[in-house]
Length: 458
Image (cartoon, rainbow, N blue to C red; front, side, top):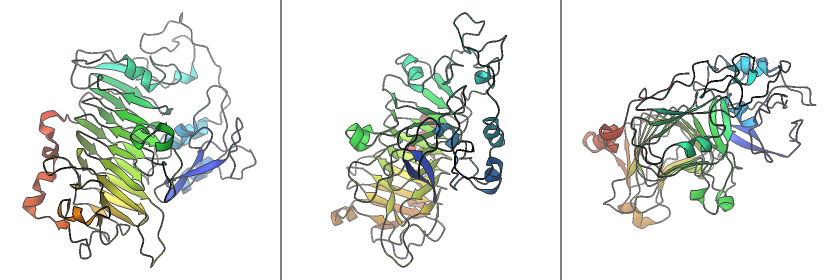
């Protein structure tokens, strides 16, 4: 199909979301889901779409660029990914319908306006770009917290996430999330790096369906898979709350070389992710090194889409495969969830999934032995029939059968039957599984703060 954006006309790609697909513009790398206008595309009224379709369905709409601000396609698409897929966000319909309203008066911001230091809105004139910012936001800094507010329209101190990261003092001694970046309803199209000299940063969004950071690098374009991440975190004490990390590069076909595309790489120790989304295809989440915690996150991919050598606990997460579907009666594998890279029996690393769910498309393995001592555990996890009966793969190296640690404990669903599992898969006992079931696995009692700690309210 063709992009009907009135500002540009370019060929389209499709990026899958669960069983369905997004529409992605190859030129701007943004997900194209905007308001309906009569640009030669026959589509239902937006309210009908929102009422009749769930978020995983394709919504093909033509684009209207408002004179006030050119909304990114990605921002609009993220509006269509509610945390609860069968209950649309109450403000979603209003936001889409507001796009059709006539342009409001636009007042240029100037350094001479009577605005606060943190929120550069006019107090005496109506500025629709910043109208949803309360007058007392952001709150003042405290001895424990510094706030770096990010908004692309200039309503805060910073217009990009990377600018805010750069402004965080190096090696800050503040704890309990010393630097908070509050991200407004938006998709920030940029590549972000948090160096090791910037510890204790928090990215706080408005919801993983509403706020995101997206880029489109691949292994080819960035000279290596590890460098393709939309967001890379090398600092200790990173926290993300209610935000998505996306790589919108084209979905690779089987056998494609250099098409791996990472959404997030986390190589710093003591990182926590609460209510976050990770969207991509091959190699979505590079859970690289360190101790990490993922709670109630949404992780989408196709091949090895959680990979690395970290020690991580995933609790109550939704793991969604977008691997190629397999026709009934055909025995083939089109994807895998994990590829853990534990190198030695002495390394205290591995992935543990507790009370999670696995669904989507394709026929997939739970994990592949990227390195000889790969370690992955699934406990109390619901597995759909997309999980292959053999469950695991040794990377076609039988010598790894004796060294990998692949365990399952009291999992449910059509994909959890262990009768035909590979011989080296372990059905864990109550005693064997105990170290993997809670945050003690990642030494959480030493560093993990509760979700509400340093949470900024708008």
